[in-house]
Length: 479
Image (cartoon, rainbow, N blue to C red; front, top):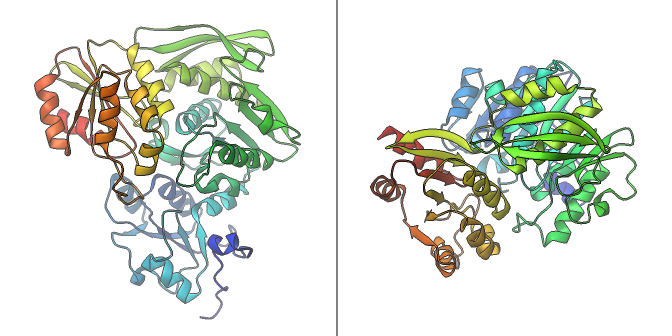
């Protein structure tokens, strides 16, 4: 084909070949997204569409997200085949989950059309902003990005926002601003965040996860150190001082470093006089550099959200945002979808949904739930991926044991194939060893029937996991 650059993908770059293609934001072209229905892919498809790019995409299933894109005028095809790759496409964007055997990926290679992994595309977008804020960490990225976004919106800073969930304040997962400020999540999986260009980086926590990619915790910490090194000399790293040996991440960085923490009282930003209301929402007095600061009250539950808010206080200090503006933002922030989200009541019991899919997240959610009014705390847990379930089997059991009674679904495979050596029955056995009352059902309908027969007025039901377990609560409310 004429006028096409030789295809060089990020996978080629891993073999030592430099990626040549650069998106020219001054001359919008046609870009095709493989897997456009993903929460991050859809957001950036919408953002580039707003910049004048012609966007097309493919996915396997129609969803609320893809219908939204179609309303914007973006063409979405519910199939992935080589016919979707046409000569007028200048760039194909794909996620790490897309394999080289994907028919669209293969066709783009055959036609010599440049292809780019999602993270590299995000990095190139970030280069357009002089104030690029990237929120990283094993847990809490979506919530912290959302809190920061609320604060920036309340301060009239007109940010562009990309969040990994549905944020009610922007009625979606993307907001196109017209300032120099860009706020986004930065995920460590497959080292995606090492493709970014942040001027401000936030590290919320560093724990073992994604063990299908990382070797061990040391490997994960190494990646976060590399992320910190991306921040330029004039930029700032904000890091949780409660992270074990956090100095290993910050040592000899050229950028400014700000710390925050709940346990480490020597951090730059910390909290005193913490209390919780009858729903488990926290209040605290901020302490900055040892000096007493403002009093802040949250509309979201749990101590983990006090910690997330401290990160945002540190961020706000860089931009001169005053305490009253921050408090107004915190008062209006009531969480994002699937983060301790109130779904409704059925037969007198309350239904909450939460995205927690790692032992630490489960502990945080169930600790928060303990402060929420209830008789019996029920948890319907859907394990997410075989590798994670196998790697943290005993940890999952210990975390889930904070619930009074547990119901397990089958493992949500996501990107993986069933290896045949791990199942929810193994988790059930571990919970039973801890003396817990636990049930396992292979399908959602049986779970729904069991719930209707066994839960009573005043009980609290939490559907939990990163898969489609949310449908259980939603289906119950329709019955």
